[in-house]
Image 1 (cartoon, helix red, strand yellow):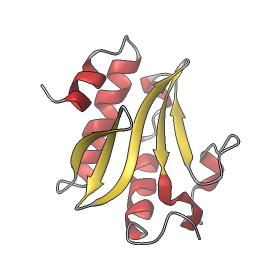
Image 2 (tube, rainbow, N blue to C red):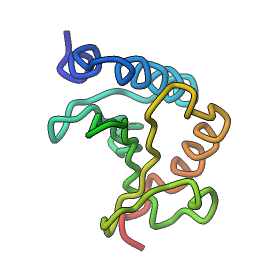
Image 3 (cartoon, rainbow, N blue to C red):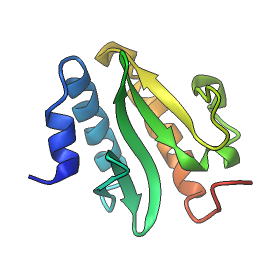
Image 4 (cartoon, one colour):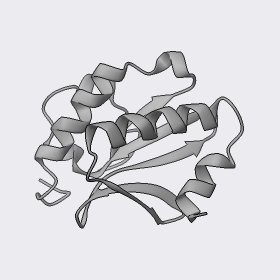
Length: 119
């Protein structure tokens, strides 16, 4: 088993289910994406460009987007919490996930994948 997959499957509920659901949404939206294990976290890439990372932290799952500095849509749904570059979506339960919103954010992030992380 690959380390990124192992990371996801080792999580306790409800985090494992949240991560698996997010994984399905990402892979459905970007069939060409691939899952890597970087910085001890599962990270999705399209070609050589990172799209997002998944992190179970405290009492939530954090989906971080490096290219968030370029986003103008959906930022009101994201958390930056003392971070200069990354913004993220946070989920404490499966019910917190709005599939269409998450897919829309992924598509916005993908538009900027070739830009620098910083504006």
